[in-house]
Length: 335
Image (cartoon, rainbow, N blue to C red; front, side):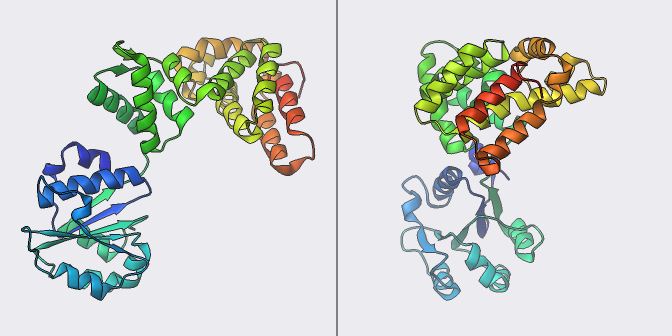
């Protein structure tokens, strides 16, 4: 079960004898642990109520003794082993044996990075407890999570395009996304809907906004304005590789769409299939028609070559490499 599903209705999930929190989304682990503590120990509990061990330093005997200790303050106790990957690996058979007859008065919680489904221990957890996956959401699942969060926390709607744009600008880490959603919702004020322009203005500060303005200008044929903004960003200290990431994100889709078009897919449909946001399809189609198919067919290669050269393939100044790429993408410099 993914943590976002668990957190919607924690009371619907029986805790059993063992809970495994797997994955690297720390914010989801903390939220899930807080919900578990409330379920097991009642309204006055928090995650500090749990007895905690560092999995890198503790041993099974110490953990077992704690599991078998009767709580003086409630019906059940929570024993948490954090960073428990090595602990699980070293004590897998022992954990499997413990779960054959676990303590009825204690809940064992293991905090791990991964938890393979092929092991006997996984099967035992699946039978006697609960596996909560604290991992990044992707694609449509992430878009739905953003839309649901905006609606439930702030009573607003966020357009699908804006919900798709947000992780592209802020990354897919749910804890950071949650903070960015709060900023965008505050910026929207009393307006009932958040759109893509709100996201572009708020997330990432002026450098992110300037990057998107620069790329829109390059796509729309305003090469001089695009180069001016490139100079501004590089002069401010923005890393060339970070800028390259934004360039590749925007134009790689256009290269993919060109390849699909060569296979007979209508250009508009090819752009949508390649992942171009619906509100940008018309501008992207105009761009590809303006630079012409011979140039468009080189887009993917230009992006790859520039990325490799920025990473040391050529001893050419980063600024010159990016300026050359801009000339290529604008159709001013043939491949």
